[in-house]
Length: 396
Image 1: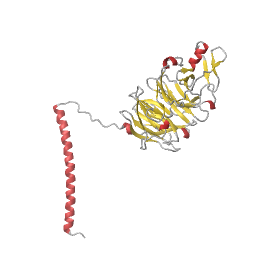
Image 2: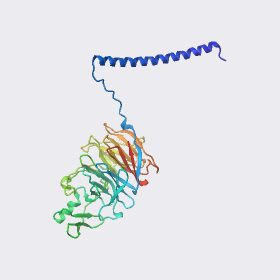
Image 3: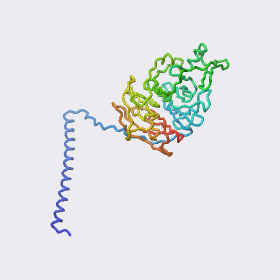
Image 4: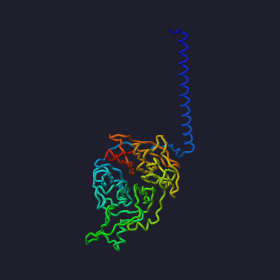
């Protein structure tokens, strides 16, 4: 047992510690009292609004949460929204390979496909809408970009980087009357057209020295179109302007000298199966360089800047596919092999990794080869979850 002297020393030590803590707390309180008193006296001597207390903004750092999923799609690979966000367009790589249209609640509104095509002759992938609500859809089998109105009515086809189907028909039949319909299937040797009041007729199909292979498509707020071309030996990004007409009869005049950037390879400024290209508020262009496992960045004049997303850290990418930049300059990257979405802040000179969300699985909020993403103005995030045959909806 402790003797009385030892116990007395222990009690004294504890009392000293308490006194020190009390003094420290008292000092902090006195400091706060002095600060408040100083502000009060300052206000009495010079009554004006006190300086605003600015708290750090951590909004960018919070990941989104899962809401629900939209079903009724077969192996979806691409997604786009109408300008007002009320319609959701989803491209299928399985089943009938249609474009499915849904409302915000996930109710199907309709389905459509290119005219004169069968299931095995089409393969829609990425999509984008312009300011007028037109929907542009790349097709891997047709080597073309199909254009529809907001309801899915077919309007036109981009056959190459500098030729639309409406232009081709216009040149060959001596003028395109209002209401004339036309269609082209790359597996056929004819172009079909029908003038109002006449039977359907045909003209020879165009002959191309080589066929482009459009894959990704994005349209920015200025109606500039960015298309990734994965043609063998010519992996690059095309930039276009959009003619004002509903159909693209003026495509050649607007885009006969449209710029391209990038080339096939693994070095800086080179691409290997680029999926999509988007722009930030500074005009920089970000390209998901799929098979190189990185994001490549160019400035607005198409000068290469840098790559990021390589390596082995938490911000590293395995197989980047669809990408999207929201109004807060957050870059969302779908990592198909990583089975998640990686988010970067691109407001500064170089991107800063924020967080990732998602993992592999079949339950709600888990992914099985996600492929594309789009974010609406309310902060809703739509992600195509290919092998789970659904579209996941997340929100901030």
